[in-house]
Length: 254
Image 1: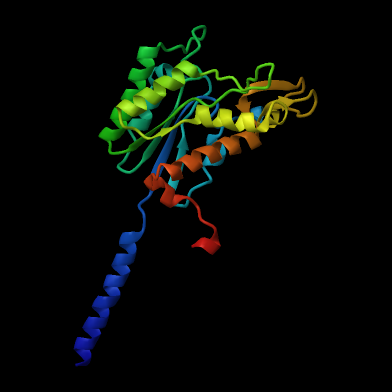
Image 2 (image 1 turned 90 degrees about the vertical axis):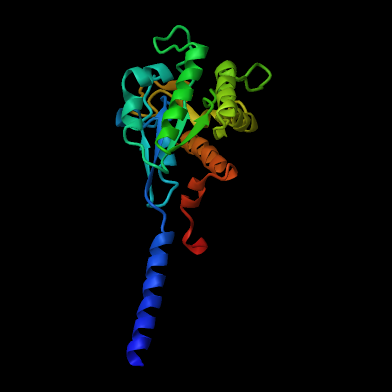
């Protein structure tokens, strides 16, 4: 009798233990590929901050954020320099690839220029090759620059290439974060002067890394990077990506 009861108890405990392990999420990697607005900055560039830097701290220990974004890169140069190949070669099932290009693709005077057809083809390549590894691609329109007209209305600077991203997302049935539109909304809400705090606006001698001062309406301050990262985080939730289940929760909510 005691032996039967022991075996029954042992089986119940074993089931509980193994079922507990089964519910634990497996470890995944979230790759960020894109340009300088997303990238990790060198110490000498501080307080310039890419939005991918604070983004890395939004998730629990089951998530590794691998920020591969690089200053000045377009979809074309990212591929030509074999940066994409090193990402796709390490992808595993359940990983994510957040894709934000456009800033450098769209400027015809830059060496990184990518024409519209090639830009779309490159985005499709990122999507197709990610899915072949059973990873989840997420397209992101290029984040807005700070540009206001004389009446204080925000002006879009990525109109054509943002629309190309939207088109590819629709045609490929790919999750889309329309960061261009949403960051423009944020800048408009803040207004002409307050929005400067989101960007690298420094007076002469305000910071030792920029003794001559700086007026940069493309790259972010620490505050700006965090606000943009928060927009991306909100979209992860609204899109109901499985990744949302791995966002850090306060102790009181656990």
